[in-house]
Length: 188
Image 1 (cartoon, rainbow, N blue to C red):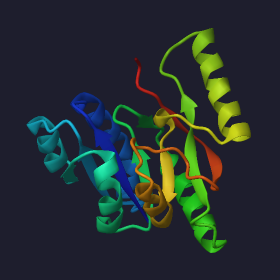
Image 2: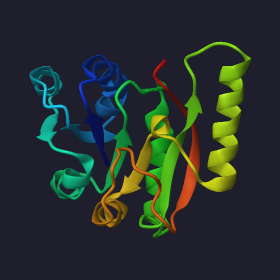
Image 3: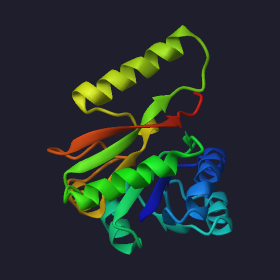
Image 4: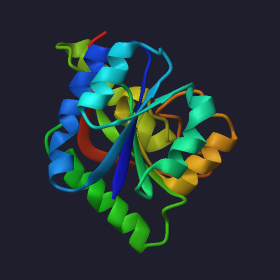
């Protein structure tokens, strides 16, 4: 159903936490494979990818995104930043989104992001969460910490334009669906 792409630049600790949050989705058959896109080139990143059974690709997002989209086994890609922790049942809502988009013939036009959740306490953290919610729903804007689910076709469009980050911004002309499932941003 989905493959995951995690772009890493010397962030091994965050990578391990993110991979751990994906295990339930692998067990349920929602995630087929994982690709670690390594722009830092450290051997420890390659070792983590190997231990987790992930493909390890070196290069920048701009260079590798289109190539990765062709290599993965799924028609949908989940793009995450290392350190992002998805809540336990995230994959159920994500799978429902993918199934609906495919059934409605909207795969090329729809993309999804997770609701933003801060790991910090206090009013300022809640205000940031509220702003991210409003920004996603009214403006179609998300931050890297929210992840992005895109069809392979949409990834091809983005890679042709030279995406500089993973997850990239939603493609021009696409409609963003904000999932209720939360992505907990890494504490800065």
